[in-house]
Image 1 (cartoon, rainbow, N blue to C red):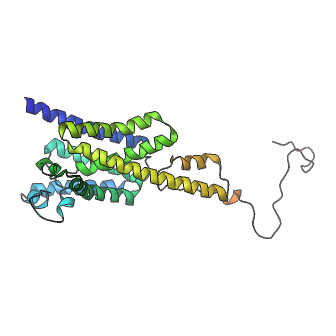
Image 2: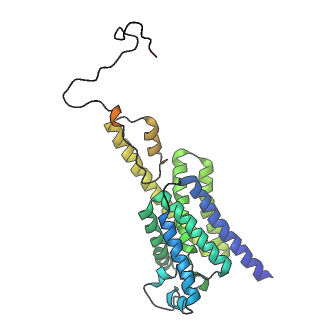
Image 3: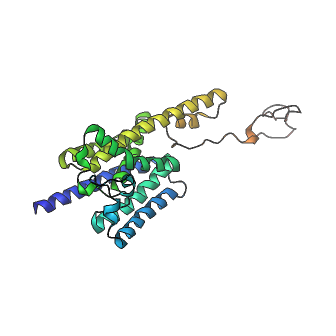
Length: 281
């Protein structure tokens, strides 16, 4: 009974970690184009499940068991699943959801790079800080939840940077709730998902700060060349627009005529230039 309760609490807390990260993503990432990256990654995970069902040797050949060698294992272990029917279904749904939000906010190439880094970098970080015991647990030798949680947490990190600039306290509290709970689960349960949340949050905060500074620099450069309105400039400077958003230039009809030729005549309201009997609107 005690073991069952421990597993139940572990699973509930693990699910809560991702729910908090997705809530932060909803505050941050607008829905734009079709999330092709989400389709590709979900297809790979489903393909891995089919491979496991049809080939009994798939798990030993492709998981990240540290006792086995193979340069491909950090990548192929992501499409292998070992969480049972419910755990596998959770991983399929969550990677599709998080990949869509990541693509909408970071952009397709950056989001793909984040998923690739999430599969490779944590192993190096674990070795750097001496946390090799994380990879010695069989439940961590396979599964897509690790990369999913890390990439989801990058959106929470970006949200906290935006909250600092916009002074939205609720957004800031929502953003930090995930890594705070992640640290607690890491120390209390030895839950590697919590560590992934913290690592992703830090990475997202750094990237968010860099993108925000770049937007502010571009906004200052644009305002020095022309005045396009304070609304767009302040929104870009505060990080309201996600990375990759382009502000449209003024339409040709609004621009001043250039080059030789007669200037377009303008009527002056309230002057004698208007015909007799014409009322200004």
